[in-house]
Length: 406
Ligand code: ADP
Ligand code: ASP
Ligand code: MG
Image (cartoon, rainbow, N blue to C red; front, side):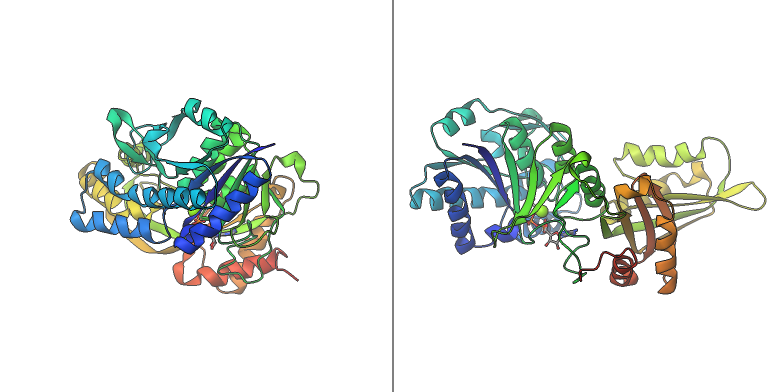
């Protein structure tokens, strides 16, 4: 007997027929003698609709009320699945985040899980009851409902698997695993049998939305065995593993992209010690994450141009903060461009091989794609390019690194 967490994403619970199919998948594990906890997302499109309602009410909404509204999509699916399971003779009940409770901090809209109380859930599992837990939501300070950020039910599932010491955490989605690139834009992408936590973490953080970044972080820290697999087939999916579980490393394991980027340039900033801190300090205080940064000292050495990127969601606030500080920062001009995309090449093979970045620059040059900003980490190279070249760049790189399926 094993203990399993099964997570089903939005398209997997998109309507009542799909939820009935999910019930059958849960039943199969129960019939095999396993203890099962299920984590669900809202029906696909529902969370977007809820976010839209909130922003239509007020662009400057109260984040606590945003959470009250957007958490509601998951309440529907867990109730429906519990009914579906009972209907086929499986003992089950639904659990909302506050009922578990899944305790989080008070960062509404992107709360972090602090603790999952398992006593009652343990009792129910032991009594062969299936737990149907709402993903994406938790209970914050002062009994307020919180949500974990978009895509957060992956994190709910991993946190639950860790808290319940589950043997496996299966993430069921609309693709049958993690691919060398988003299969929606690269038809020649290949499914990976295994990927390391570290590579998956980088892939997710630079745009591969197949798993929420925090879920991978948590899985790595808590040693949760995660498998990404299809809701529609029984094919084995992709296992996320430690580095020593992979014998032959590819040089590059994947290409990812993000259109969710905006570029900002401060022109003619006086070049003095402390200027970077003066610019990025106020942004950090406003919880704005700055990603890629380049600084160019001008010929006279007195002023500098500073270019950096933020997510499109943070764009308006970034501009507001910087304009508010104009007299203090004394920059000449603020330029901005939302028409950019970040393309990244990821692979642990980079640690031991030179020339990976060069191959990227060559492949982009051959397609006449201009690189605006570059950043690197130990196992990743990212470039910022014009958004209209996104698909072209991802496909060209996929070919250049020999990743195309035969
Ligand atoms: P769910 O609703 O099940 O959580 P998501 O839409 O969040 O599903 O994640 C699955 C999607 O992630 C896929 O449909 C695919 O388009 C996208 N994706 C992006 N990069 C990759 C990748 N490297 N491998 C697999 N899927 C990817
Ligand atoms: N329903 C939430 C979202 O769309 C959480 C999730 O699907 O993981 O972001
Ligand atoms: Mg998702």
